[in-house]
Image 1 (tube, protein in one colour):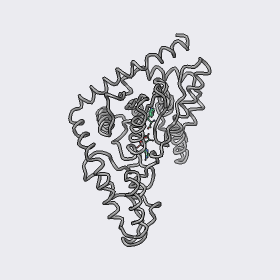
Image 2: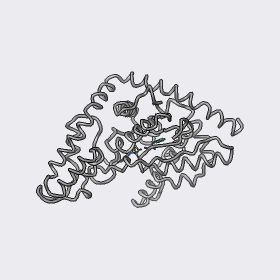
Image 3: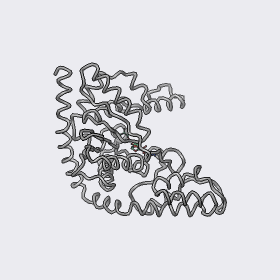
Length: 335
Ligand code: ADP
Ligand code: TRP
């Protein structure tokens, strides 16, 4: 990684952040910046992306504050890294329009999130395959490309489910460059070994959309209840258990060090531990890791105007960084 390389990632404030968001997006993104102090790192709240889904203004505001507090509580330092809210940077939306004018509709038809809607409508026998799809959902990958290309980001650490979006951003950048000359850096998806997909309590991917999450913050009781709700098979307490088929173990290994993981693996295989005890250990592990961040999160959430000030300062820096690219873009298209 070079001095001029930009690392950038964002998360939508669509629900309370969960341990899948932490292990799949927040932790690898912060680690990447830590490991590469020579590069510059940018993190943002992809708030206007969330408007495709969140229609309640008060809830929207809460979700933004929760997500900002989560990033900071998990280790983001707004003095060293650029941390901002997407909607405070109007250049993103200007660039999004320019990019949409040279992006083919076919590329959007192939985007996973849109295709998933169409498939679901088709399966449910709906005559309109586009039922329930707003234009925000449809052109989402273009706005995401603008988020990335505006800052000439090279590395975009995100979970596996976002890989296609990064490829689309790359395609959009390459097409623009072919047409108008070299304006954009081509972004790369960062596959980090620690960004495996975390299963939810029901075995599907952990996602706000499935109601199967283990929340990052909130009370200890909520954490405990979520962990004790993880699906297990009906093995008796003293029976040998297959760790690789166990959700409890899959989650445990994302947070424990190697030695603790191997010990847990052996105990499950040898039938030395019941599911109840394994869940208790998982709870103790995660609760211990969250202890300090939780205190910081609660403190941040008790003064939301402070969060707003931090985000506004970050947006000022982000807009300065955006300016040279927007000048190039305007000049390239003949403005
Ligand atoms: P959700 O599916 O809960 O709505 P988002 O789509 O907002 O989550 O994802 C935010 C970030 O967290 C993305 O980078 C995504 O790849 C990552 N992420 C979400 N769920 C998981 C998971 N279960 N395992 C790993 N990473 C995840
Ligand atoms: N689409 C991403 C998600 O659902 C969020 C996002 C929006 C993003 N713009 C981005 C991630 C730019 C990385 C870079 O999680």
